[in-house]
Length: 41
Image (cartoon, rainbow, N blue to C red; front, side, top):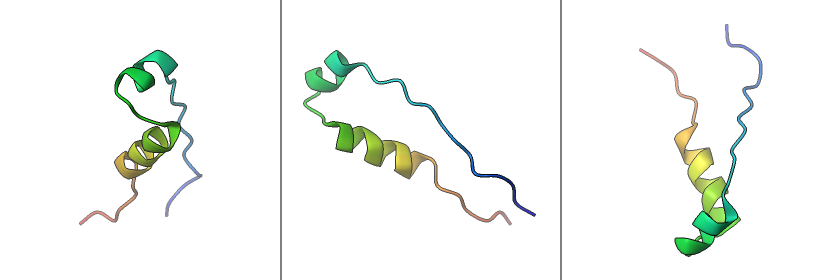
């Protein structure tokens, strides 16, 4: 069961991040929250 470790590449537009008054920590936290593993069933 299970599999290898998944890897995601996130391409960040620095100007867009600044325009929303965000930091790379915000981007990292959002990506982490959106890719949680959970059991099914």
